[in-house]
Length: 305
Image (cartoon, rainbow, N blue to C red; front, top):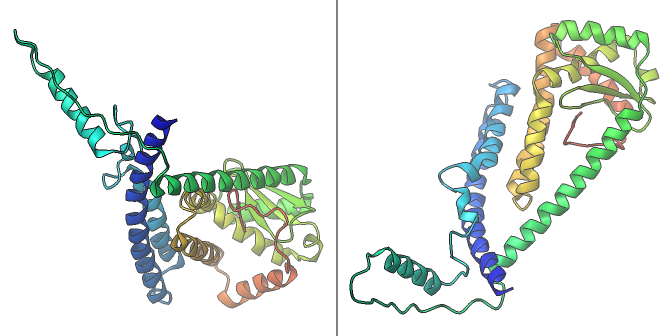
């Protein structure tokens, strides 16, 4: 038990030494990225602005593996059983003594052993809170993922007319991989989900209200997400938010990235299809008015609206 507390306190110190500087660094980077996005809103493409903010997210995802925070800091080294400086010095002195060659005379070294900790330090407590938060967030995400997958599996395929429109939209958008179209009884807004096998889901209560032109615009938008690999970016974003759930700046950046992804998808549709900005936006606004409620099986991990 004492050895475990020592290990926990040592790892807690390393966690705090990593988390606090990264909190400051992330605040500066995200603040700079959001400021740049705001200043470039009317001058730069949405895809460029989205990539700028996403780059900060990728940096945070890779930060534990960068030289500024080696992963070995999270693991106590060798015989460092306790978070006590005297114990570490004693262990180093003992290793140095053992490494010296033996002579004819007996050499003995008295090593003072530090007292093992009998309580958890505040750093160790923060580490436990972080681990607990990661576990809770992971369970929530996995349960929502399973619920969304079951919902998609239960959804029937679209009719031949809608499938033909999907095939036409795929050719226009240049999406080569297979993409299915299904009608969901649970969702209330169109979405695309599935990392390896994308599936576009249209709510059952919305499908009869969509004309062929509105349906094409919806499919163009969702196919743009597939073409831009937004589903994979969304996965990375959610994993980072699970690990760094304690970072409020990251949640702000996540909301901005989701907005910019939709803008970039609309931008890709207008460039590919060549439709006017006002007419395309007006038809999407019509669809938006028909989707007043949030999706019942909304899952950000495998789903992009």
